[in-house]
Amino acid sequence: MADVTRETIMAALGNVRKAEGGADVVSLDMISGVVIRDGNVGFAIEVEASEGAASEPLRQACEAAIEALPGVLSVTAVLTAERPAERGAGPKAETSQAPGTQSQSQAIPGIAAILAVASGKGGVGKSTTAVNLAVAMAADGARVGLLDCDVFGPSIPRMMRLSGQPETVDGKQLMAMENYGVKCMSMGFLVEEDTPMIWRGPMVMSALEQMLRQVRWGELDILVCDLPPGTGDAQLTMAQNVPLTGAVVVSTPQDVALADVRRGIAMFEKVDVPVFGIIENMSYFLCPHCGERSEIFDHGGARQTAAQLGIGFLGEIPLDAAIREASDSGEPIVLSAPQSAHAAAYRGIAQRVLDLCHAAHAGSGRAAPKIVMM
Image (cartoon, rainbow, N blue to C red):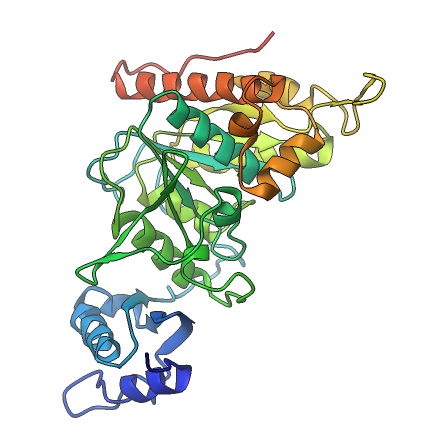
């Protein structure tokens, strides 16, 4: 197989003209974010926001130029556009979508419900929670997908013990990879684990759109989306452009984490995404030797915050080395120790979340029920 390099890619794209008789896309500095992995190529084409829809033929021409190169197995080119800042706007523009509207959202065929698993800050165990919830749902008979929305630090491949590249269908769609009965997609399947993703906001948003809509998910009862921490581009893309059924927020009990949780919940409320509740992770620690309980990160803060905000409290997960070891080994605790109290906690939360998704689709017009664990 011929070697595919950045140089050969840029040389091929140098033959693609933006307009008949005009300059090529490389000399116009329109190509960025080139990623190569084992013959799978991805890159972004930067265009003016006003030219977005009209630039689709250009995107197809760029893909065709790379597909013709020896050694190329698949190509994903995305159009990105920097929106000009409004005069007088602050450093972070507000979303223009009013609460109660999701006009940009388009349903994904075959997917009944889409759940966002979010956190206000990193390091609270959100991805571990998303994986265990997804696997628990699948073990209970649901048809489940898991989308790793963290483009910069994908962790789902390792936690789900998946490696390699997804197969393509007609060079246009990717087949979701699967393990433990869960269909998965992650940027980690498309780039080497140590490859830095130096992408700007529009490129991240385009990548997420393609991983959602250009993947053969098949028929799913629920797609669990593991969002990156915070309230940045990825979160707003999912909240505004994807018909989210609801969201759950993962937090540790201490005040510094819960302050970020409030901001995250406020973001979902602003774009009219129901927040089903908060999960308190690392809630307490039981010493494996003496059985003494220690509340390392405090305890009960998430329950209290949920009560203050009038949303559900979905449950608490202890701090335990077994959960971390299971995640690192690629066999989630709900499978590696199904009889443990930890696995039971994840299964209970998973079932409640599924029930809330079903209730949201029932069309009752009422708010999702408030759940409080005693």
